[in-house]
Amino acid sequence: MTKQLGLRPLAVHFDNGWDSEIAKTNLRNVLEKLDVDLHTVVADWEESRELTNCTIRASLPYIDMTDDVGIVSALYRTAAQEKIRWIIHSHSFRSEGINPLKWNYMDGRLVRQIIKRFCRIRLKLFRNVELRHFFWWIFVKRIRTFTMTNYYNDVGPEIDELLKNEFGWQETGGWHFDNEIFGLACYYSRVKFGIDWRICEFAAWVRTGVMTREDALQKMTEIPEIESQQYVDYGLKKQGISPEEWQEILAAEPKYFTDYPTYYPVLKLLSPLIRLLGRLQILPAHTYEKFFKT
Image (cartoon, rainbow, N blue to C red; front, side):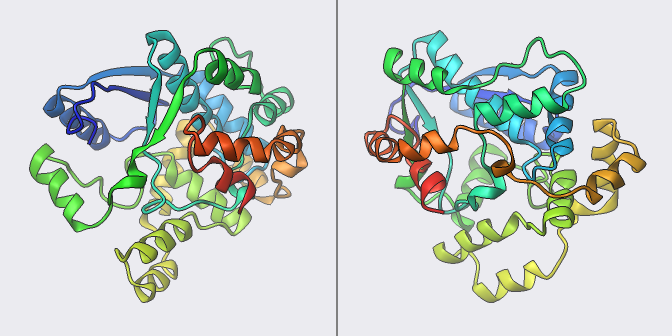
């Protein structure tokens, strides 16, 4: 879409070490066909693995929280470095919906707290995202955001066919198989917290007519293939978590962001400002809905 509009985008990818080979091929094919340059920010694997394990030890449901912090950091820091004023987001309310706040809340103070309490190595390369960073990027660097997928239909068989025909897109093999940590993440969230991440996506698909409500309810009765034992075991091995430690993790008391110090009380006071900044496309459009309307 950006190329059709005559824009000159720079693609930014955060590599956390969990991309499937098919996902890498799909990304490469699309960018080559569109002649778009790619800037990849590669996370240090030892630190990335430890950050994920920190979140697991903290008993939070959102074990890839620090990966999403890495994505935000990569986008804004690259934009600031390259003097790019606009970040185009691909979050889609049609295909992803919005998760309940307790499922995947994140902020810099929460990340700092779990690192302080649960990290077992010294972090030298990880770059957290604090409120002061957003202030710098938004008000000094004047970086703006635009959620382009809000303005066109990005789901359905027509989109699938376009990707296959135009870019040689390959199916990854199932729901979220492009990100190989999801087997471990989804099993952990469902068994420990009773959270099934599919429900928000299926609800979004039902609203947009891609899936019927009956089909969604039927699929929700089935355990997704990505949670099969081979993928969970693969995730545990790669994360360096022993079977004994894994059982202790699952048995530990579930916790949420409300059990740790966060910026949320401050953000709640600033919610009218955040709503305005979203409408002005200074913050991602869905920020207010996610943090203050769910």
